[in-house]
Image (cartoon, rainbow, N blue to C red):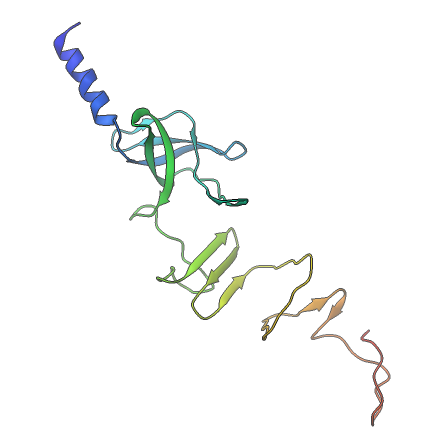
Length: 177
C-alpha cells in the first residue's frame, strides 16, 4: 500500500476518534426516533442515528428534531463512525425561540415549551400559557385562576350564564341555565 494513502487513512481515523462534533440535521424519521446529520465542517452525512430525548425513570420528554436544526453528536465508545445525538444546540443560525407569552426569548431561571401555536412558560413568579387547554380529570386550585376568555364547566359558561327565579331576601336561585 502507498505510504501517502496509508497516512491519509490513519490521519482520517485518528481525527474521528473520541471527538464530540457539531452537526446539522439532514433527515428525520420521527416514528422510529432516528435522524441523519451532516457532520461539520466536512459536511459528511451519517447513517441513521438515535435522536436525543430526556428521560428519567418512566418519564420521557421527546420532541423530534427538525431538519436544519443544529445538534451535538458524540462518538460511541470512541468509534468515529458511530455517533449518537447528545443535545440540540442554539447558535447564530439556529436561534432560541421567541415566546409570544413573554414577547422575548427566555431568561435565566425560566423554562419554556413551544409546540406550534401553543406555549407554556414557567417563570419565577407564574406560569404563562398560550393556547387551548383541555383537562380530563379533576383540577385542584388553592389560589386564583385568571382567564382572558370565558371559562366553561360542561356546557355552562362562567361569563354568559344566567339564573332564573331570582327573588329578593334569603331565597336561593335555581341552577344556571
